[in-house]
Image 1 (cartoon, helix red, strand yellow):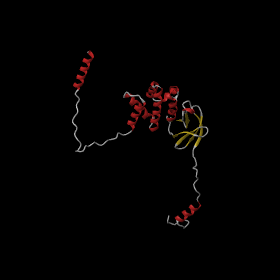
Image 2 (cartoon, rainbow, N blue to C red):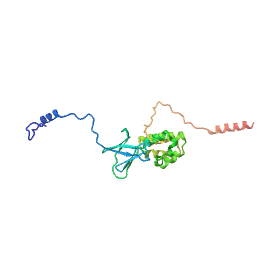
Image 3 (cartoon, rainbow, N blue to C red):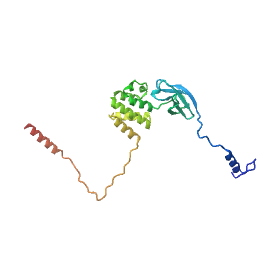
Length: 225
């Protein structure tokens, strides 16, 4: 900056200051760069753009939607230009971006209609079998838990938690959630507890089962009398 310009003979720093003096401020509203395209959602409420499929929400099945595609994202909007959902843009062949959360949110409100929805048969088989056997309260709670799992991780991880819990013989929503939490959170290593020398030593405790046998024998004698 302290060198003279090879042609103008002034310091580069002075020329730069002259440029700054006549520069305009940057626009307050950034210019949105993207490609807009109107699409129609299929019966699964998915839209197709650039030969890729992107999920929306069950309420938009068969409806007209707008897509704003940038280099990094696909933003799906309704006909009033309100954002519905956004996905990371896919590149490659025959790819699909699926966000299960909107579908699970809707089904948690109407669990009895779950098996009649088109998207139900897209769930992993183990989840289909589980929900088919659930009664209304358990199905509602389990759908909410599944949605929460998917929000925190993904459908594959959530399915693994259901599978592991069912293999252990538990199927209630709380146990499934605890299984998921244990799988996705590190075990806390507690330091070994050391006792002070002043801590009194307790004698070992043993149970004499013969006393219980004697009690039962006396009870049997009383019954006979």
